[in-house]
Length: 53
Image (cartoon, rainbow, N blue to C red; front, side, top):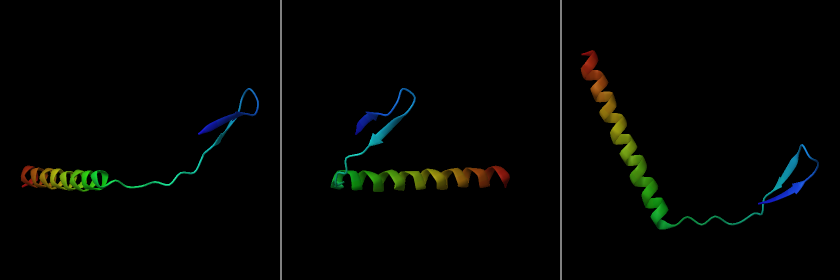
């Protein structure tokens, strides 16, 4: 990322495009993270249902 000064109040940002490569560790982490979030959400829903029962 490069900054080019236009004037004292404004700057333009230039992005250098790069290819994004997913690592297998990142993909596995994302799967386990969202699975954990789903489990927590189901537990919260169950607790709410018990409270209102």
